[in-house]
Image (cartoon, rainbow over the protein chains, first blue to last red):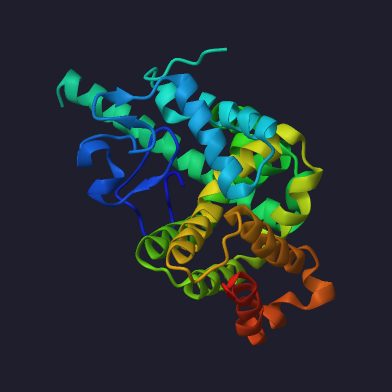
Length: 94
Length: 204
């Protein structure tokens, strides 16, 4: 979850999916200098847009039981507004 | 003060004020959303509560959905963080359920507004809220999968268990007055959790 205000704070959240990154295993290759999580990229960089959207859609189907089409739309809308896109580090593909 | 220092100071102050205004708008939104719900609240009411111009709300939150999401994050952040920490180290689903019920009961009015109003909001907002809250169900899925690997839980799709748990919790918070949810979650917490765990248990 993004930017906490009241509760205890995780050190960082992933700039793509907002997953809290608490332990080295949350980071690609255990590299805690990175600002995205192990699910959203490798040590070489953030995954391309389509891979991110597909991965997050599958995640929502699995964890929330969302319909595949709705999960795909939700994923696109979410990724399109993520910090990594705002910073221009992930290019939105239509 | 040199010109360079003055400019740096001025930029820093502007950033600080911007962040302060954003927090004030979010605080106002949480207050009004909690009081009258997500459906009935207008951005104009939030602007008035925050004592900012209507346009300032849109400068910080270009869409109503973004303001809703920020309000949800700010309200549920402690729960999200603690669920995350607990789910990393436990296979005890009971602990996770208890933490969830107790934290939700602290924010009961807000959570109740959310579960009652979300189905009435446009589908794109529903999708965004689901996407933003996926962290909650993930923790349940992780612990259930671990329990399945150990042979403690039945081999069902974890999402079925998620439907079951959130179905029960959201039912309680959809009718808080009718059901007396406050009392139920306080006095019958163990029974609610035990029933869920028993339904998942491997009987083989």
